[in-house]
Length: 597
Image 1 (tube, one colour):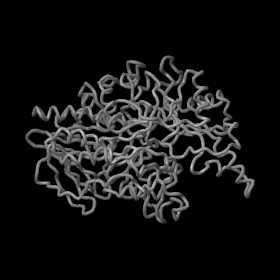
Image 2 (tube, helix red, strand yellow):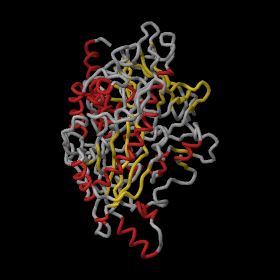
Image 3 (cartoon, one colour):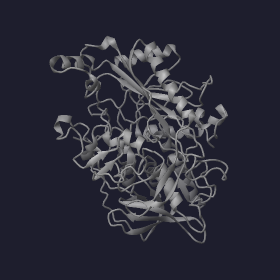
Image 4 (cartoon, one colour):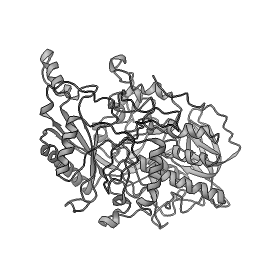
C-alpha cells in the first residue's frame, strides 16, 4: 500500500540534437538537488542516470511481513551477497570467477536481499581493482537515496575549520555560517525529525516531531548527562509532520519495517531523491531525464577548453551518444565522479578534466566503523512488549573526543548510532540456547531488554589514499574501472580501540550490563560514506574545486557531490552534500544569467 500519488511519466522524448542549459550526471542526493535548484531558477536541464527507473514501491515493500515472502526476504537462487570474510581474505575484483550468476555488495546480505537485488549493482558487470574495499553502489533513479540509513546531520566549524582546531590537514574554504542558510532550506524542503540540543559541534536543524526514545535509551541518555555527553533521538531525514508543498511524499506513521536492513520507504516519508527532488523538478517543465545512460567522458570544446557536454553509452544497447550543454554538473557520487573526471582526457586536459593540480582521486576519505557494544537492561527482562518497530532510527551520541581536551593517541572523533527495545525479529534469538517452550519464553523475556550501539569515526584525508584508473580492467561496457590505493592508518586504528572502551564505559555507568563487544574494524568502504577525491580549496595547485564546487580549471564544470569534501568529519554526509549542492547551484544559476559561464 502507498499513499503517494502517481509520479510523472519518465518516458520523455530526449532530444540530443539540442543544447541544454545544463546536463547533470547522476540522480542521487546531489544530482536531485541540482535538478531542483536549477529548474526552479528556469534553466532547461537534462539529467543522465546510469541505471533504470524502478517501480520502487514494488521493490521495497516495507510493510511486507517476512512470512508473506516466499524466501523470508532472500533473493532467488543465483544471487550472492559478498561477506565480510570475502572482503577480508580476497582482493578486488570480488566477483571474478564466482559461480553465482549475480553478485551484490555486502548490503544485500543484511537480510532482505530480494528488496535490493535490482537496486544494487551486479559486481560482475561493475568490477574494480586494487586494495581491499567494500564499495556499495546503486544504479537506479535516485541512487543510494532509495535505501540510505536516514541519519541527517550537520557539520560544524569543528569540521569546516578542522586544521585551525587541531592542526591536522586543511581547512575548508567555507565556514558553518556560509552553509547554515542552506541547511535550513534542506530541512524545510525535505523534512527532518529530531530534538534541539544546542551543541556547538553538532548544530541543530529545523526539526519536525521526533521519535520517542525507549526505556533503555532514556536511561542511557540520563546517565550520559552526568558524563557531559549527549544521547539524542535519531535525527532522521524523515517528514513526521508532512510536507504541504510536496504531493509525492507522505508523513511517517510508524508502520514500516524501518529496522529491516537495508532500509527504504515505499510511502516516501523518508527522503529519497525521486519523490523529494526530481518529480517536483519535472513538474516545472524544465527537466528531461534519460535513464540507462552511462557517462564515460566530459566532452571538451577544442577551441576554449570548456566543457561542452557528456559522452555516454546506453546501458541496454551499448550505443554511444553525446548530450550537449552549456554547463556540466557531475553528481555521480564521490568515486564515480572521480572516475569520470579521470576518464575525460583531452589535449587541453591530458591528466583528466579539472586535474591540473593532480589531486583528482586523492585525499579520499570516509568513516571507519565496526567497533560497538551490546548491553542488557535487566529491569526490562520479562516485561510486556512495547511497540518500538517503525521508528526510522533509535538514537545518536555525538562526538565527545578532541573537542576541548586532546585525546592521547588520535585526532578528530567519532559518534555512536544505536537503538534499544523490541524489533520485528528478536535479534537475541540466534544466540539463545535451548529449544521448545522454554527457548521461546527465554527469547520473549529478553527481546526488548537489549541495547546496542556502533561507532562511526572520521578517516583522515591523506594524499596517499587515492583511486586511479586501472590500465587493463574494464566494466561490461568497455569503460576502464577504478583501482584503489587506500587503507586505514594508525589514527583510525587507535580511534577504534577507544570506541570500544568508551562504549563499555557509557553502558556500565548507566547500570546496563555489557553482554558483548565488537572490536573488529570493518573493511574499508563499509560505511558507504565516500568523500574527497576532488576537494574544494582556495589554492588551485592543491585543490580541484573552489568554494562553490566549481572547477578551478574549467569554469562551466561543477562537481556537487561528496567529492568536494575536504575532510570527512564523523557525521553522516547526505544533508551536507545537499546543502552544498543547493548553495553551489544557486551560485551557478546567478552566474549563468550573467553570462559568465
